[in-house]
Image 1 (cartoon, one colour):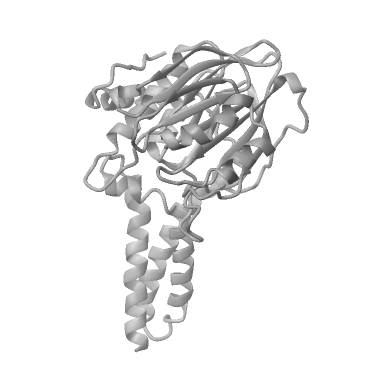
Image 2: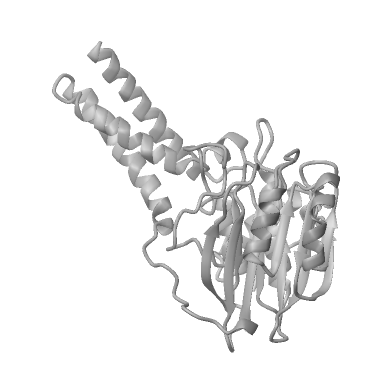
Length: 354
């Protein structure tokens, strides 16, 4: 019986190590990209398997030792990738004048969810300047009317599907519009926002489709690169927010950040999983609020669950005096790779080399 258990642990170690390594392949295959999500669960499982294999060393030292080597490799890969999301640095800004503050709340309400009360209470309590709600439909349109009264500057598109979107702002908008980035049928918010000190910053809110069985991740990745192209074209510092259906360590997200100069406030602060609110162990960060240079993070908060499979995610920022956009520093191949994806997806957006 012990021999069988040790063999099972060795097989499991090999599978977990393979699942940790395969997402390093730069491909749009759906099953590879989905393996990018559960890196923290993979790491926890590898630790448990490793402890079990240590007990097997006396009876089968050679096979158990080889399996332990796979455990170490898997843990090293996951540890290296998750390392930036350990709470090692904290937040560097203690205070900020009220006229330079900007708070952004995003929430995927989950299509078909009919529990609006807790979310509305959270919006009232936190009083965000910007609020992006995703997967909204006609029912949510009615329930969100109190938000529109308090945050009168709005953009919205009801699709009757998982990709309805509502955007609310306390601050005046500049040239706000709903666009379909990368030729996809998922609406996106593209607008300027006038801060209380009179400065204008840019905001892009997206909700691309996730990698799904038998479907490529190309459409999702194309939207990420299209959003980067939009931000690169503008002169004001910008924000990118939404349920990206991607973890921050994925190849496409990191490339998008390099292309646009976006900063992830989670780095050095913590993992902050926003999905799945209905599971106690299957959780990873899919909802994001990135900012360009010229902002500093005051606080990051995951709000309480409200019936959706996503937690609301709130980031408070400070617009820093005298600081403009950070010039992106992409790798040599980033622009070409992104443009290949955009072309294959049928997008009209293109990134220009600098």
